Length: 386
Ligand SMILES: *[C@@H]1O[C@H](CO)[C@@H](O)[C@H](O)[C@H]1NC(C)=O
Ligand SMILES: *[C@@H]1O[C@H](CO)[C@@H](O)[C@H](O)[C@H]1NC(C)=O
Ligand SMILES: *[C@@H]1O[C@H](CO)[C@@H](O)[C@H](O)[C@H]1NC(C)=O
Ligand SMILES: [Zn+2]
Image (tube, rainbow, N blue to C red; front, side, top):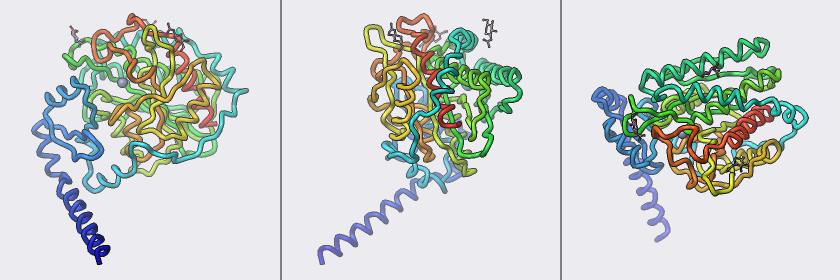
């Protein structure tokens, strides 16, 4: 009866594991106590339980390039295990995606994208001393994006589009702009990027223009949104544009939003993240690097076909970005299909990010490159929403 004995031991083993996992679960009371002491709960990997850290320790981790989810405000002992099991590192395709089929509408539409509009948006965003999620200037940057989106909507009132703040316990709100569907309210197509920036030596008052990280993605979204409204785009299913707060503080804004969509049972067709789209390392070939991890393989293939159909970009499959790399990871964690087209191969990224040096004057900052990502965003919204 070796087999059954082994089987019994196996059952005992998994029971013990399940019990251990339960004991590791953190109660709401503990979260309240630790939070009131100023501690933050960080998830550092898929396989380890989250740990409590001070804000200073959290900053030290960021300086060491250690990525994490700050789950302090989204951790729910009831759902923790379920949620962890929904996402995952190498998701197979959750949904099947079509081939690009609206060339006759999308090609003329992307011709109307304007680099100078995008440059104007970025000049305004980088003018804030920083866009740190806990700083007044970070809050002002959020208000500026909301007002700019509202200004675009006011120019095209028949679009039916709307914009709202998604508020948090810190001062910088995330922003959600919606182009409603004409035939259904679901599933939603989401394009996202983060509005915040950080100066790692002095987050609160240090200079952090964040031109590439992630001013570039933020203005790709603004320009795609403008082009779609100006072109009279009326999707049949809703298309949303998200500007997330607090990505640099542990994917804070995107986790709060993905969690709220998950709790209300929202169906999401796809989530495409734009985080750094402007830098081409001097001497290297310009490519869009499609992230292979915490993304959906079918959606990634679809994005590669959009790049071929609608942009001048070359694309490659990137090296893995790793755990908690950008806001797409928040959507992946809650079980939604994501993709991330990055500015380059991961190792050739902009060395100036998270500092006062992340400006448009960096050698390698490439307007032509980032402009192509705005076209990609426009095509993505059109092809999936139409
Ligand atoms: C951004 O700033 C410039 C001046 O630096 C201004 O002319 C422009 O209207 C501002 N707004 C937008 C939406 O670009
Ligand atoms: C942070 O900001 C200060 C003041 O603006 C600046 O002197 C310093 O170089 C910045 N740190 C980094 C890492 O860029
Ligand atoms: C800038 O980006 C474009 C588009 O990817 C590329 O064709 C061009 O070679 C890049 N320029 C430089 C100097 O890398
Ligand atoms: Zn970023």
